[in-house]
Amino acid sequence: MISAWLAGLCLWLAAGWMPVAAQDKPLGEEQQRKYDYYYLEAIRQKGLRKYDAAFDLLQHCLAINPQAASALYELAQYYIYLKQDDKAVQALEKAVAYDPDNFWYAQGLANLYQKGGETEKATALLEDMAVRFDDKLDPLYNLLDLYNRSEEYDKVIGILNKLEQRMGKSEQLTMEKFRIYLQKKDTKRAFREIESLVEEYPMDTRYQVVLGDAYLQNGKKKEAYNLYQKVLKQEPDNPMALYSMATYYQETGQEERYRQQLDTLLLNRKVASDTKLLVMRQLIVENERAEGDSTRIIGLFDRILQENPDDAQLPLLYVQYLYSKNMEQRALPVLRQVLDIDPTNTAARMTLLGEAVKKEDYREVTRLCEGGVVANPDRPEFYFYLAIAYNQDGRNDDVISTCRKALELARKDTKKEVVSDFFTIMGDAYYAEKRSQEAYAAYDSALVYHPDNIPALNNYAYYLSLERRDLDRAEEMSYKTIKAEPKNATYLDTYAWILFEKGNYDEARIYIDDALLSDEEKSGGIVEHAGDIYYMTGDVDKAVECWKKARSMGIRTGVLDRKIEERKYIPYENKEDGEKVTEDADKSDEP
View 1: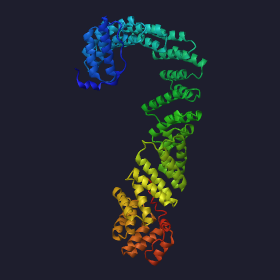
View 2: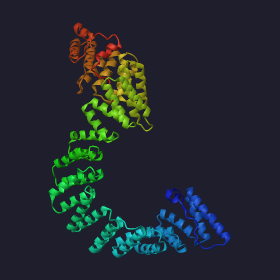
View 3: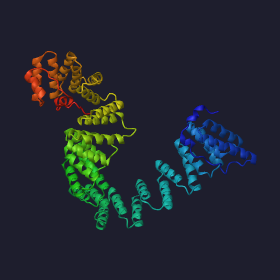
């Protein structure tokens, strides 16, 4: 029995099966019935991927009829998979001998011959197949490849002629014959081939341009020029002829006319965008090779876009070119043009969004993201930045609705961290609207999806401390943030303030000192907290100094004024007053 690892045979082996061949050796009725039963059972077992059983059944088929081409063919497929090509060849040779009229057996054997480098055997078999199966094109194409490799050009021409008889004259076959005749240095017949194509399709000017190109590539420049001019006289906007005419000028050293011709092509509204893209790419490559100035390329792009303002493809190439030249700012208006033409162009929108975020231009962020959620409603980044932009503008209701919409659209494959961030932003907005219970519920959800969401932990902890509630939990959450970012002034301040509210003044001072020593810019709220902590640790002068500095940084409350005047700590009476202290502190460290 064949080894058990045959169970791993690939799926293609299980696909399709050959019917019992009509040319299998005739058997008695009883033997034929047995053969058919075992053969069909082998095919069924193969379909069930029970390859061991199928292999054994095929061997049994051959015991009944050693000349059964159908069983030999199936066995050959197993040998091929097992990389036992010699056995596969032997099996297929027998299958072809016993059933010479089966195309697939012969095709399989020809492929194996070619795979094994037995070119002579493959060629002989394919030549026989080309005669025997004259309705099939595959043997002819295979022969074409073999004859080309062996440089038997007369035979290549013969095959091409047969293909042309069956399929009719075509540009592909004609150009191949043209190439072969040139290889044979028979230029007369080479050009005659393309001329015959022009005669066959006199109304198709494309073939006249093809002939002109063939003339130009082989030194017949005058003939090429005449053909291009003839086509352009008939069709002044013919893109192939315009481009070929430019090539003619370049080949003949007429650089100024070459440039003018390209301008004519590129600024012609009737020329397809794909053609212009091809030409511009070529010009960019030529300019780079010559280490030329980018001014001409940029000027051409500007003129093309002015002439074709509705083209969405060329601006993208222009943007790529500008970025390659480190001219990102010049690319921005081009990207806006792309987006005006095609609002669904995510690449353009994301690039513009990145620039707006970098500049902290939240009006532009809002504009881009409001369009983004309409054009690409499945992209969470547009909702994310839109929510942040609304938050910067104080539009808390819009922040909440945007986050809700994003969470409704969140798919199973959306990262948990992304979902957590939306809950965090929503929690900040709820708290800003003095809806603390809904804020805490949002933070809880954020931490369910991502327990280490640092901004959520910090904001949740700080707001709990303002309400002087659940301080143990607040301390635990805040401690995670300073472990994660030990030099973050905002997180250090939160932790220090929670310790302050719990009465751990000396420990609070350690962390507020770290906050003040941080390289990050400090807010007035942090400085006022430092004053409160210094006072409670007995350093009144330093406390007053901090309170005065906090006032100079924009903190304006009656409580702060009294602290400075009376030189003592005075607590804020309620949460709302406490929030005033941190109006410029930005405790809501957005994710």
